[in-house]
Amino acid sequence: MKSSKILYKVQILDEEITLENGNKHAKTALVEKWRDHYQLSSRKFGAPSLKEIYEKISKKEPINLDFCYLKDFSLADLREAQGLAEIDIIEIDSFSASNAFFESSYGTDFSYSNFVGSPPNFAYTIFNQGKVNFGHAKCESSMNFNRAEFYLEELSFRFAEFEKGDLRFSSCEFDCEDVLFINTNFGSGNVSFRQADFHLSNCNFQYSRFDKGDVSFDKAVFRGDEIDFRKIEFGDGKAEFRRVDFGDGNINFNESEFKKGKINFRNSVFGTGYNTFENVDFGPNDVLFDGIVSNGGYLSFRGVTFQSLSFTDSRLYGHCDFRIANGQTLDLSYSIFKDIVDLEPTEDEVKLATLKIEGIKNMGKIFISWGSNHVHSLITSQPESSLFSKAEQFNILKESFNSNGKYSSEDKAYVAFKRFEMKAIYEKDKKKGPLHHARAAFNYGFQWLVFDKAGLFATAPLRVFTSMLAVLSFFSLIYITLPSFAHAEIVSSVGDPDHLSLVERSFYHSAITFFTIGYGDFYPSGHVRWLSSVEGWAGVFLMSYFTVAFVRKILR
Image (tube, rainbow, N blue to C red; front, top):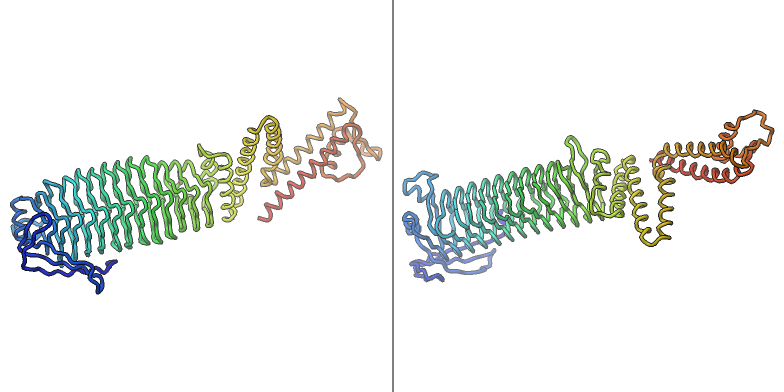
């Protein structure tokens, strides 16, 4: 359906008119523009006869229809009158119809035409009712449709070919059922749909080809149910989709290919439909989706290949599928997630070198696999981010793993978070001067040994238990060797009824001291006293450490 309720009423008057360009016509067309029951404007056009126009075309004379009204213009009718085949090309020389008005109840037809001479001009022209067909049309030079208005059932440029010049549809109104650019060859010139309003039109650019020129849909507005950009070949020019409002329809860029040009979707808005970029080859380009809004629909980049794909400062409120095929850097920094962000491989491998999630606000779920996605490498491979930034990103992933019930991955992310946080604090403090440097080195070394190596920040109870045995054995060896160098012995208060050797006494004393049992049957003497005190403290600490790590595992 049409999005507006524009109605044009036309009267043909038998009065001569001189147009703004100086051309004179024997008849005048009075065109009134109405919306609902209100008249918006009234305008006079020249009303040349179709017979006169067809004769000029047949003679290959220049055609100037500026400010003219044409009813049922059709090259198909001209071919039939001349006995030509339906697909015979009709050459049109220096065609101009700016500020004109084309109307037809069944169709305005420019199919199988070849525009030569001066660039054809349809700027500010209105096409009303029926269908407008530029199918298989050819043009070697530029073609201008800027600010044209299309109130139609269908606008078709199927298999049209534009070779060298620019094609301009800036600020056009496409109020149609269907807008079709299927298999259109846009050539090497620039193509502009900048600020075009497609209203509720279903748009299909499938299989179109762009060459070296820039392509711009900057600030375009789509409101149709189906917007199809599948299998398009974008060339070496820029592809600008900045600030495009894609509406709530289904947007499909699947299997399109980009070569070397810049690709920009910044600040675009995607609605509640299915917005898919699956299996797109973005080439060796930096692809920018910074600042986009995805308003609750499905946004999929599954199977895409790219060099860099950026979504910084975006609002991703729907299901976002980032199970890409091959990419160097995916940047989601400072974005807001409200539903699902999926990077976890299923049947196909996800090959991604670097993932940036600094400053994100995650109010949904991030699905990612520590092992299959190589998460540690994804974060640590960031060349420019700080240690604090990497720590923050691991912390974000830790919270995500926890909410998804992946506790083993949560532990790994937590360990990485603490390690980078420790190192970041050390690097910061050591710059404050020699004294701060020495204190920072001691704190870092202590935390590295006790918190990290002894028990992986309370995430590995078995590792804590192993550390306990190592400490117990360490002190036992000291008790064995120390008496050879100083006054130090372990004395039995009950006469040593079991006749324990030095090694046995040392391990036994170390065990009851470490576990703070305190039977009293053996006690330290000499320098062993202060060592026993240190071991007792270490035992209390490590037993508490083990209890925390073990209970944490059990409770989860």
